[in-house]
Length: 81
Image 1 (cartoon, rainbow, N blue to C red):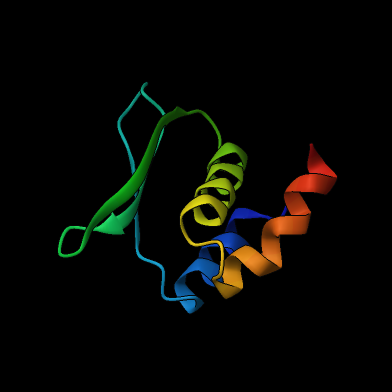
Image 2 (image 1 turned 60 degrees about the vertical axis):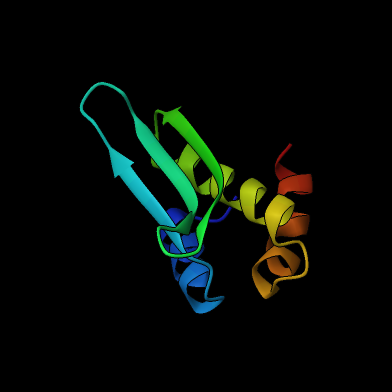
């Protein structure tokens, strides 16, 4: 799996909006999309940034399968699982 820095950079460069938040002792929450255009996916209770990176990749491949991001990372999940 790619590191969180690369995943976030590539997500930004692909112009795919997202929110990443945390609440002490509840882990990380990811929301794919934005307030203006709506959210297409959400995942919470993630414990590590590695889990966050993996979940972002899965969500983007599901919701934006034709994006450059999805094309770049689709083979990465196959190798890691």
